[in-house]
Amino acid sequence: MLYRGNVHGFHFLSRALIIFVAICGFSYLSYVNNQAVSYLWEQAEAINTQCNKDKKCPVHPAGWSKHDFRYRYDYVYFSTKFYLFYSAEDDVFSIYINYGPDLSYKLVGGVNKVVSQ
Image 1 (cartoon, helix red, strand yellow):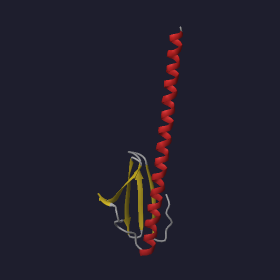
Image 2 (image 1 turned 90 degrees about the horizontal axis):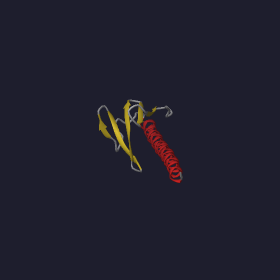
Image 3 (image 1 turned 90 degrees about the vertical axis):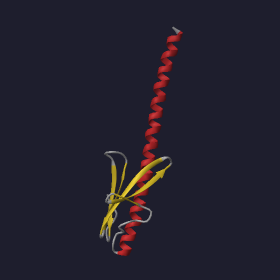
Image 4 (image 1 turned 180 degrees about the horizontal axis):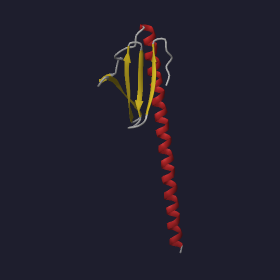
């Protein structure tokens, strides 16, 4: 009887530990994603400032590498890597980040425009 109680106690602790780890993991991912989105906003604001200064959006931002028809920047926060993508046409640009196959966060801006989602 005493042994059986210990087994139930072990199962309760293991479930509680799994739930705790899941909550910590979700919180960490949420925090890292928010940091990446903040960085995306910073980059968009800097590019938007350059668009307004030059009256034309840059085709190839400094430090970004060519990737298909757009440019990519690898942003690393802690050990998590995010890919930022940028494309521009004359006086408008778009910049976005992919979280996974179906999740992304996109911003647009340009000459005489405010950066927005």
